[in-house]
Length: 113
Length: 114
Image (cartoon, rainbow over the protein chains, first blue to last red):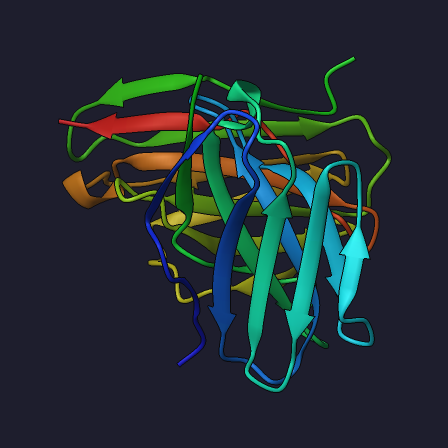
């Protein structure tokens, strides 16, 4: 069946270190991938996205890497800050399915000061 | 200037009751969604509407009935509530209904069925 899974349910890093959150997806028809950040008591918030014709995209302190060969997605956060503590979800958007997002289970990132 | 709003934020009710959750977006988007987040934080799509037309229905029990009076609103009505309906329900909207459209999420409604 369709699934997007994350390798690590929790990740603890020291403030200032870089964080890497990984994700595996299974739907070859997906052509758009998104990382969301969800803080406690709030809705998911868009961080960065990448289309299937790209393998890397950079934002402010964040980079998303896409490896279609092994169906792997990662989110890199540079110089992690306490405000980055949240649950991070990857999501895939299969082509021609009306915008449906398939979410992974999430990785909880904890940043130690 | 809230983009996607939901009411209520918390809802506690007993099994067997009927309840509704409301969602409104002021972004001028054409497409709206309902997602359910369970106790393990797994998010799964339930419904999607585009310009008041249902386009996604993900094998949700027919006790759940979405209603879109206009493209800025998508409400969720739940009949005969069950314990397993306890979850956080998120509304979202996007400019279009295809892939590659960013979805904006509301703050969620935490439903507790006792």
